[in-house]
Image (tube, rainbow, N blue to C red; front, side):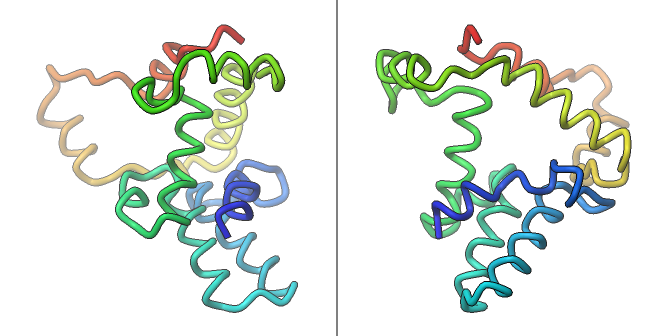
Length: 154
């Protein structure tokens, strides 16, 4: 289940499965239909759905391992792994075998293309909206800043 959730977690960023819901939900729905159409139990498909739907949310980290690890893996791939858990030499060895080929720029471009086509799908939590309105002096790094700062030379 973990493998399938990892393989399918970005379906919602593809042209075929984009839509007005957040890309995580679009992808989770596409994966569920695919899995159920191919004989997976509803219970297994639901766990994979959760892994995909929650992979970009801290909520997933509090769920069972098959769900939590999808987000850990996706986050490490985009923003870099926790150096306290994965040594830089290991990361370098993986990147030598599997070059990133300009992933940072391509990923942000893909996400921006989806947001331009389906702006309602760019979900934000209500507290973010409140913060933007009432804590105007606070300027957190956004996701694009964090990708640019990721420890990958590309």
